[in-house]
Image (cartoon, rainbow over all chains, first blue to last red; front, side, top):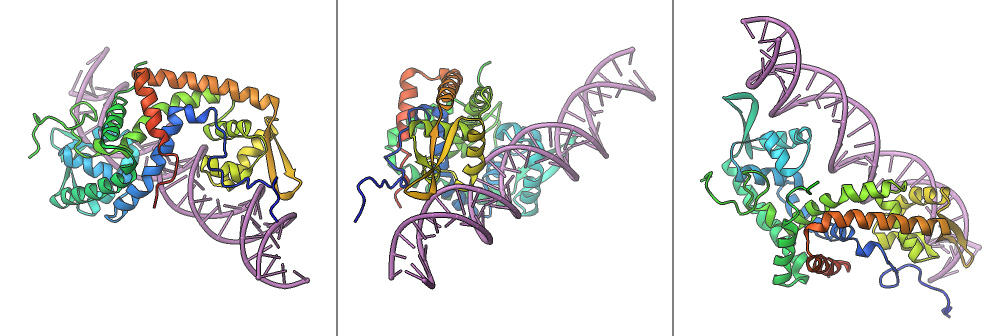
Length: 158
Length: 158
DNA sequence: CAAAATAATTATTGACCATAATCATTATTC
DNA sequence: GAATAATGATTATGGTCAATAATTATTTTG
């Protein structure tokens, strides 16, 4: 016989009170982000890509000749951490690294045909996976959400 | 096919073209999230808290007697990773851990008066810091964003 | 009672991110 | 025009974090 006072104490779905965290937008952003990640990562994994390598390949595809420090700024990652990622993309024949003649410290990054094709396929799959997660939003809600999020691209004015 | 005068679908920086990443909501969520974090973390740091310890303290404050596994589910963190966090909160006298008499495997977590006060102060500061970051949004936009993000609380239907 | 399940803990691992140091090249300045 | 500083890429390193497995204590189940 089940005791009436024995609480599940687990299954903390609707039974949990939260007066603070839920009102913090940053917290909500992270939670929503965590919901989208697994599906997107699985999609990219099918093509041997992680989020960072996909991002690099994508930006390089869109900006042929971009140099590594430019890429680092665009993706907001430390340029030192880009090195191994670009090593791998180059190794797989997805991008080329060429010294720029006018400044031989720099490397110009360009996606190969294979790289561009992979980018397109992976982007399609990732977009597809994302669509499933965001199916719970209406079309208007999705576009409005995107519009608002785009407002955060520029650095916060100090 | 890459043209300098081509109008970028999205602006990732000065002169950077991005036809793919910027349209991915997950990517935007992460970027927006990364914008909010530093300020919030600094605010919490003033009170000797990190995001995870603040979250724990806050949920415990709102749910006196919650057990660790319940907290883990609520915060979506591995319960094994909670241990050290709770150790520290207990050490600082912000929460108490008491065995549940009806089930001596469990520990009931309760915030002390000091813990509740700290939670309130920290929450105020964090909220304040967040407000600055989100000042670029109108009041309607903020509430709408929050409303939409709340829709992601429940797990994606499989 | 024996065996399985659950709660908390510990230990360990790998991913990820930031920092500093190094090397080659270019820009500067006196 | 040499000495010095600054820049781009690289390498090495350390710290934080999240996920996993193994351990112990307790409770539930068959």
